[in-house]
Length: 231
Ligand SMILES: [Zn+2]
Image (cartoon, rainbow, N blue to C red; front, side):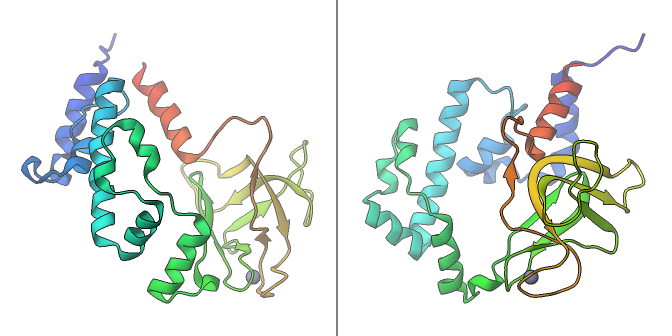
């Protein structure tokens, strides 16, 4: 019977292969250290990880406080400075930037109008990046090779204008069948009602189905790693 190597030796082997892509240890800042130092990122003892995380986030907070004029002012309004971050509980004091304010800064600082600040939507199961149109921020499908669908409980497409779970037929995948139904609730339209470009679009608001477990790309990867490494 084949002997299964333990996780530690597999990770050491992997890290040796990745070494050429890692910055030299003597150049690490606290944020680099929090990423590169642990042999296994998901098994660091909690107290050790919290200490590492505090140093890393405090370092990066100070960097933006010192170098970003907008964020510096934002912190002054909240009356918070990097010196105020002394314990892990102090991380709660770091001022958050509301999404609308972040977009406003993109416009004010970079000169990119809100219309051209587009979100995108895709699943790791298919390389079909859906990008918002500038006029209405509807999500446009790359419809030459990618057919978005909203199927019913029998997995039959319900057509346009009905809210339901997202699915797609994805033509570029050869290594797996890319014909998959997901848990995100969407509404599919035949074409964008604002810009009128051809091809189907999704309404910009996409919701999780109530009661469904959390299943983003990161969660999928975590589950695959947890399963495979536990063998
Ligand atoms: Zn549009």
